[in-house]
Length: 305
Image (cartoon, rainbow, N blue to C red; front, side, top):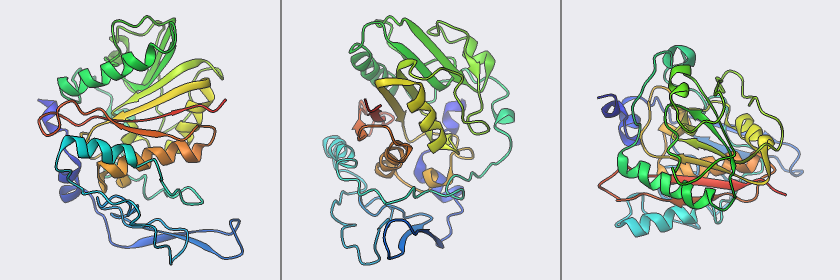
């Protein structure tokens, strides 16, 4: 029954997002002699993909915002997959990190420890989306023999493939009962509130892969978390952030609930980019059955060697 309460982004926008039309300006005096202004509308931030995000530009006269345009509702699954794959090909990153504390605000700012106090032994995406993510993991994990893997923001299930043997599988999350029921962990998982303390309790260069499934939209300090992901990855190790259009809307950050799927690809790509130390990120649509199952997206990047 709880699954039914996971709302799509469109529903969130109409019910929960108090997205004022006001914008704020960030100034960077170190880029050039001219002041660089980045205007970020509460509902329209990117303006590249025709899905609601309006403008991030390094100049008021920048005419490149429409360089790439895709329909918000792709007429076919193949068009949507192509649109997703193009988002990070020419992302036009602004000169400075574009998201503010306000962007990371949430409708419910109560303690996350209270929200996650009771275990939720439910699936947050449908079985077809889970199968698609598991298949993707299988293909990627098999590029390393007996990899060392960390699943952050985890729970009772990591969607990891059964045909991959790990030499180490660690996990962090918010609820100990959920974590202890996860059969893939090879060591005791750790309860960590990354919104309170964005630190991972692991040594540098420890893991071949770090994953986060359908939880990146809840991170209020995503840049700090991504820097920690980079730290614990081995050089050449891969981070994998996956998400759908489902979430607990009161706990997802404002910039997420106010934007659409293509924008989310850009947003997560920006987390990698501004964390530094990653090769250029890639967006992938692994949705198994567009229009008839939950969509599933991956934004992935490799730690620079």
